[in-house]
Length: 270
Image (tube, rainbow, N blue to C red; front, side):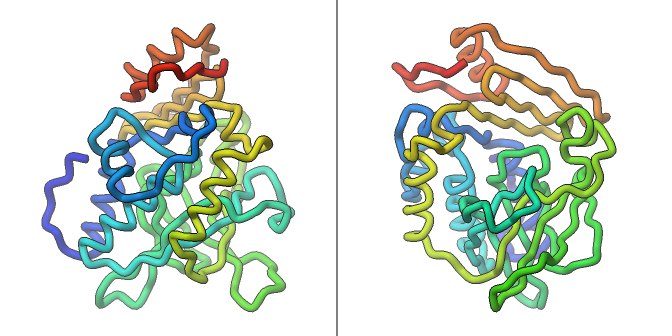
């Protein structure tokens, strides 16, 4: 992913490797669209996300990134979160998103880290697990708040400011603070995510089964393909959209703009 810094477990390294990962590996759900649950084995993830022109969704990104961080000496707790964009009834959403809680040697604060949230409200830098503080991460605005919860653990909510706004794109309106996902901090194990991954990739009502969702980030823009709609959001807030006409145009766009080679025989839904 182009990062060549010193291999040490400190906050500067954590910030750098998170940014490098975000800029170099796209988010995509081609495997679920073709009815395949992607492997979460590290060898398979390395082959797909690192050595091939492919990306993945949250379980793939964050499983691979957790292994990288542990190799560098960070402490990593895998979390399962409820994606709550568009609802105020948090309990109505299942825990289907994977995020990471990262400990840095010598730092008493854990950090929320996430390289696999396929939305424009995603984190671009690690943020400490504290409430009441607004974080500015590469032009985006985030904060963590507590939500009412009947369980024994505190419910944390990641919020983004103006993430969708009046035009449905980050920074394109004054939409206020919008909840992205909610989580508690008990650890989930790789076996838990094997089950969640299989369910999301294969369940007939899963949105990832029927709609192509691809995201690519650079320091200058956020590029999103949601079904046939392509949305480009520039760093200055400029938003452009267009509809793709057919699968051939989509296949060419995925290769040229997203750096993704579509497997042979895959029919792209448009």
